[in-house]
Length: 139
Image (cartoon, rainbow, N blue to C red; front, side, top):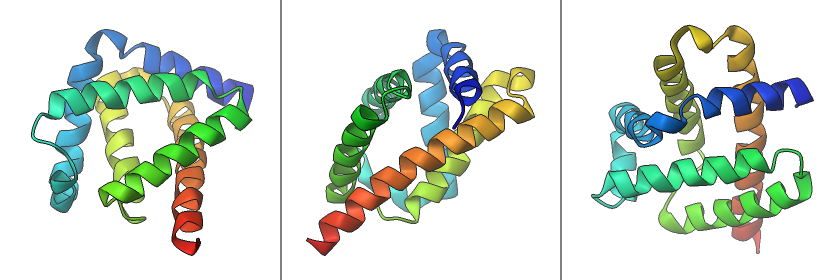
């Protein structure tokens, strides 16, 4: 992931700030439509979860220039997600729902270059979280 990728991801995410809960709810609606079994992983109050998601993304994106800190954060998050019942195949569904949500929410501002940057960032984050889950299963 390049400094340009980081800048694109951060600037596109910043555009969602005023509509962050609405955007996160849109994300969950898409995820639950695509993978209905994931709905059971969350409490009924999806707006609280939406706020948590956006807060975690804010922290993670702020840490993109601190790989060691970001890895520690994501490993812990991956372990927690495993304890909630998140399975490895859910990460692909989350990726698809995230990209759809960004495209829907940002419209023309979600350029091909911005999409590629988000894919790089998400794939790196997901790989760290999945590695933590694998390590936990192996222990």
